[in-house]
Length: 151
Image (cartoon, rainbow, N blue to C red; front, side, top):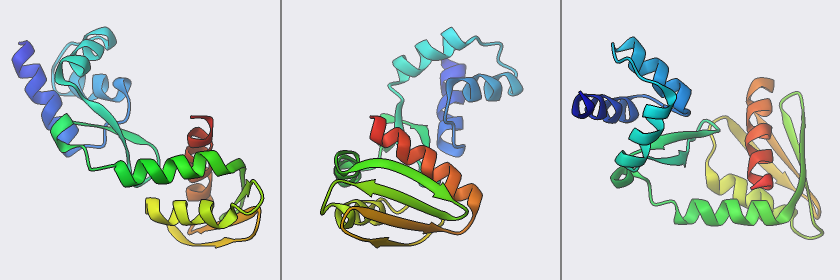
């Protein structure tokens, strides 16, 4: 039973954007597996699943051999994290406040992370603007960027 469950988990991770253990529990239950969150937690450790940034904001589980080469992405996130002090949004525009002279670095980092929905960025000395297509995308990206800052 464990082997079949592990195979199903691998299939779900490869074919769906599984972001949380609760989502994985729900998907497995829908597939006929009676599992608890504790069981899934152990399965995740045994399968060595990792969380990776998803292009549509947030994170998802990936298999260790399928993790994208994220060295560049991690560097960009680190630049963003170290230069930005605050993030907020109004309508479809996100405003990022940075330390002096780091607005361009923060916006370049956002551009390099290639998030879906970004129309463009504009940088000043200590401020950056991120223009996205909708207010909902601004809200989600703002939440994600705040998570990056908090580390």
